[in-house]
Length: 61
Image 1 (cartoon, rainbow, N blue to C red):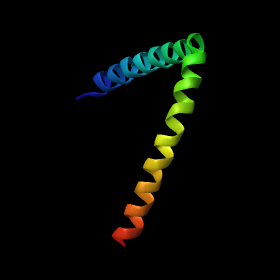
Image 2 (image 1 turned 90 degrees about the horizontal axis):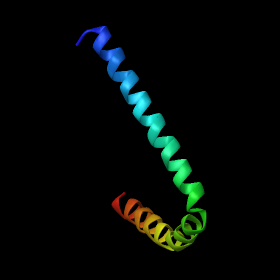
Image 3 (image 1 turned 120 degrees about the vertical axis):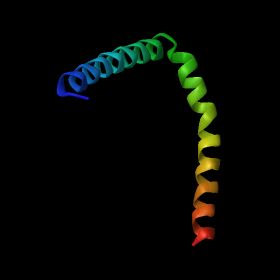
């Protein structure tokens, strides 16, 4: 792959990533109440998963 193709691919990825970022932020601001509700609901699950990973890491050593 030559430099021109690499820079074109990088530009397309940058453009796509920027679009997805703006879309994600816009949707989070639009649906803020639901976003917070899901965030509150997932805290317990994330903490339980983190605890399991810590116990697995300690047990594996």
